[in-house]
Image (cartoon, rainbow, N blue to C red; front, side, top):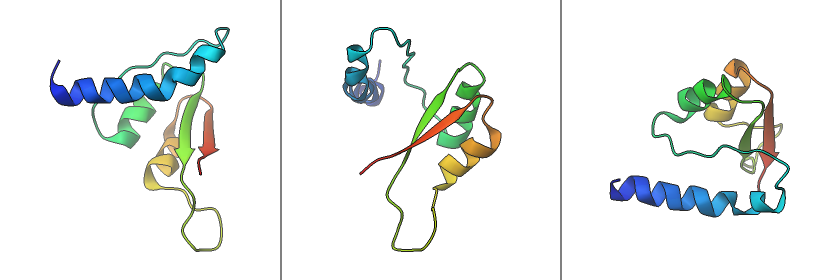
Length: 86
């Protein structure tokens, strides 16, 4: 495993740590390198739910979604939860 892949895996493990509090919830976590929107849409074909973050919008009116979230909402093969992050 190269250094970049190891660092991505370490970040994923850290981000997924709170899931351990809910052992009844099955979560598959894996590191996949590639274009974000296409990779997530592809992963959605094997998922029951896809969770993506929504960063705070810029100082503009209306709900602003990034291009990745927008593409996922348009093309996902499963339900998508868009979760705002501070």
